[in-house]
Image (tube, rainbow, N blue to C red; front, side, top):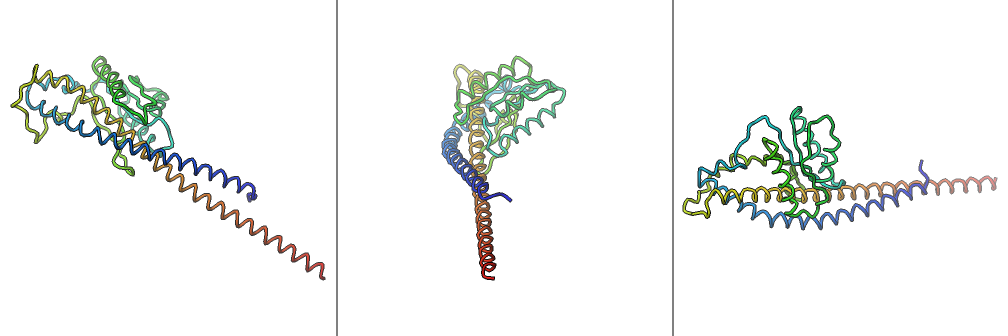
Amino acid sequence: MASLREIRRKIQSVNATEQITKAMQMVAAARLRRAQASIVSARPFAVKMEEMIQRLAGSAEEMAGHELLMPRPAGGPECLIAVSGDKGLCGAFNAQIVKASAAWIRARHGKKIYVAAVGRKIRQFFHRLQGVDMEIVSELVGIFPKAHFAHAELLWKDVSEAYFKRGISSVSLLYTEFKSAGKQALIREQLLPLPAPFKKAPGVAPLYDFDYEPDARTVLGALLPRFVKAKLYRVLLESQASELAARMNAMDAASKNASELKSNLKLNLNRQRQAIITKEIAELVGGAEALAA
C-alpha cells in the first residue's frame, strides 16, 4: 500500500498534468476558431472557381484535351499526397492518416509509387518504410497551425513536376475533412487527372453567349492550375482545423481523466488517514485499559 507521502506526490503530479491539458485545450480552442474562419472565407472562392471552370469546360469540346483533364494509361506509377499533423496529443488524428497511407501503399505492392508528405508525423512514417519502391517528391513540415496559400503553391510545384515528368498515372489525396468541432472525416479522393464528373457539370448551363480573350481554351488552361492550388489550400485548411479540433477533444478528455484520477487519489488519501487515526486511537485506548488494569 502506498504511503501518504507517495499519494500526495501523485496528486501533485496529476494536478500539474491537468493544468497542462486544460491550457492546451484552451489554446487549441482559440486556434480552432481562427481555423474555422479561414475555411469559411476560403470556401466561397473555391465554389465559384469550380463553377466557372465547369461552365468553361462545357462551353467548348476542344477543352477536353487539357493535360489536367486527360485520363492517363492505367498501370503506371501513382502518387499520394498525405496530410497529417506536425505534433501528437491529438487523439487518433495522425494514426488514422498513417493507417490509411499504409493501406494505400499495400494495395500497390510491387508498383512504383511517389508520395508527398505534409506534416511531420506522416513524413516520419514514410522515412521509416522499407522494402517499398517509393520516392518522396515533396515534404512540408512545420506549417500548422499557420498554413498559407504559399504552402499550397509549393506543394503543387513539386507534385505537378513529378506528374508531368515522371509519367504518373494518377494523384490521390488523403486528408481529414473538418465537419464540426466534434466530428472529422477521413477523405481519400483523386486529385489528378481531374475526375470525369468535373468535366461536365449537370445542371450548369454552358456560357455559350460569352466570348473569351484570347480564347476559351487559354482561359481554362490558366484557371485549372489555380483551381488545383485552391483545392490543395482548402485541404490544408481542412486538415489544420481537424487537427485542432481533435487536439481540443483529446485534451478535454485528458483533463476529465486527470480530474477523476485526482478525486480517486484524494479519496484513497483520506481513507488511509482515517485508518491511521483509527489505529492510533485504538492503541491509545488499549494502552489506557492496560494501565488501568
